[in-house]
Image (tube, rainbow, N blue to C red; front, side):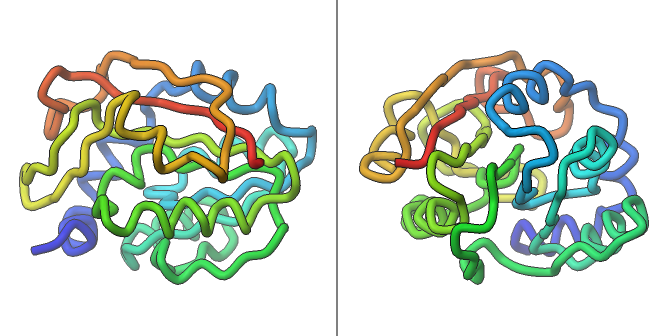
Length: 195
């Protein structure tokens, strides 16, 4: 079973676990860099929680996920269609003020991550913003039928070089995940600006 299969089979349970998670601190850090009513690409939107919040604040949002069941949940929650698409199939060009990739890139194999981040860079308008988060660590691991590609401050920087200038990289406590925490129960977060 790969990670997408896991989400397809556990979509309702994942919805129940994550829909009410409090990520206001992340929203505040991210949105201070996004123009009011700007366009946000919610990349790996999961159950649609973050897209719903951004829409409620007047932003324009395009949400997509690789899990068809997650796309259905998001579309239902938002009352508009989310896209069923993999990161590797993105073909956007200078369309968004910001990309939000909250806890979604952590399933992308290290060897594919550079191409995905290049895709985000192409999707963004000049000086656009990328937010992403990973489970904190330095290795690939399998937990509960999902594969995680953990990241720390030193490991993420080469993926950004030449594409994004980091504005902020920080470690935060993994207070939400009781099912698949990182080895030290932390997240790596970053906000970076398109070069």
